[in-house]
Length: 121
Image (cartoon, rainbow, N blue to C red; front, side, top):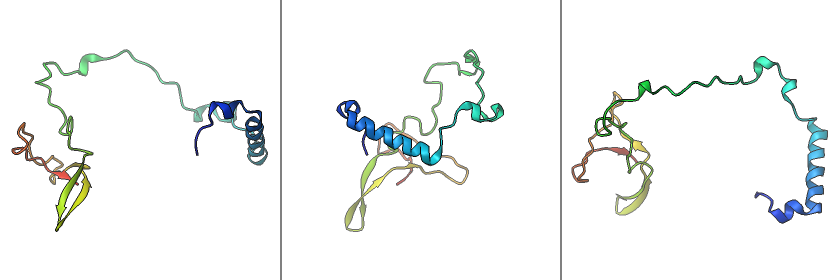
């Protein structure tokens, strides 16, 4: 399946085939629905827009605002090769490992050797 190219869209033969296809669908299923076919209470209401409320924004420098544990984590969704027996197997890091309380395991460190974060692969 692919979209039609401009040449096919302009071709009278393709146009006729599309019109025939559409008419078969209408004959088989009936005309398409409109808003008038539904009770107004069943339609999605128009939302009420509010002005931006900046009162919930944390004050302070970016260094004072703590990111979420996964925020900026460069290891999630990375494909890696790991030893499995005598061979290497490909794996994908899906998420951080967590303890029974839901807290991420390990701590981040600028030196990768000292980084103790644990992941699910």
